[in-house]
Length: 253
Ligand code: SF4
Ligand code: SF4
View 1 (cartoon, helix red, strand yellow):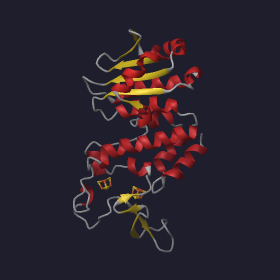
View 2 (tube, helix red, strand yellow; view 1 turned 90 degrees about the vertical axis):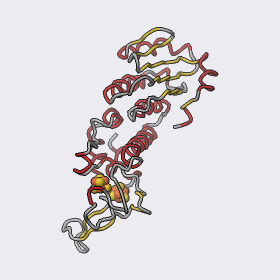
View 3 (spheres, rainbow, N blue to C red; view 1 turned 30 degrees about the vertical axis):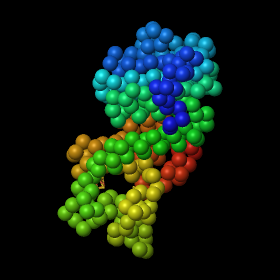
């Protein structure tokens, strides 16, 4: 993601040749060439003026507040619409970010970032990785599952040290006749080696009660970039490695 995310120094250097699309969270408004532009008018404005500039810079100023899920959704919709402007396709779209540390900022920066990606297949991979990062930031990095001595919060009073990374398998009939608790084959060194997005979204009842709930409506990148069949794949492909899930996604394009 880093290649299109720029620092202040680079921003100062290129801003003269760039159409700077400034968004202020404080005023919930875009400002371009010292002119306020409502979110709904962004598409028309960029279509009209982008030809005069070499680059496009999305300057997201998220300071002075915390971006909400709803605001991130509105921003993603406005940015996604820009995909339709043919003339910006070959221009580099940079992102300059002043973060207010809301987890939803990632939805917005990713939607701007993928305007740089030409092939659908690569777009899906970037979206997939970004969603996984978002989920890991919310769950793994904060130890939401409360792992202590290898036991998660939901299984503290049991002998289970696998969290929910297991399936029940009957030695003769596989998953049809569940009998034995088996550690998922993709768990290596107590980590998931499969990068399975479906498992990452899964929250048990204990976590749901704590307020963790991820679905195709509140993970905005899923909501806005995947069709209904792809959404089914994303939410039902448990115990499945990333490349296999992405293959299914691309086949449903
Ligand atoms: S989702 Fe629930 S069952 Fe699974 S590891 Fe986390 S706390 Fe344990
Ligand atoms: S694929 Fe799912 S069940 Fe298997 S290790 Fe990864 S997260 Fe756990």
